[in-house]
Length: 73
Image 1 (cartoon, one colour):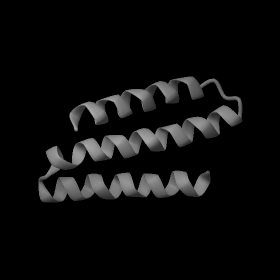
Image 2: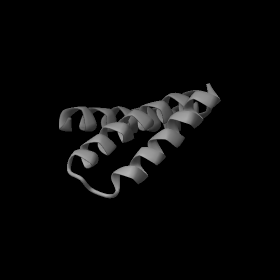
Image 3: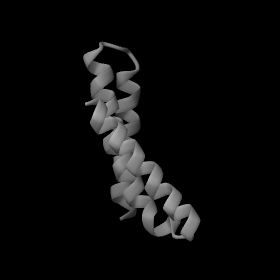
Image 4: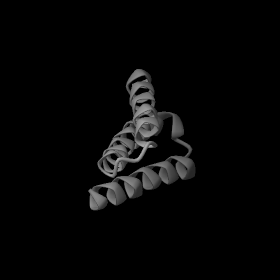
């Protein structure tokens, strides 16, 4: 899970940086939001396994991010 979390975070940062540098944030934004939602799902799953109360909030943020990412496609 840790490797998946780190890799998805690197991909999100790389895509966001690429969008900012090239000025194509409107095209890349839905994909960044989808990947960020998946990353938050992984983080929420990890927090849920540790029985931390922040897992519910992270799952809500993941759901919102996935919803907005799918809606903007």
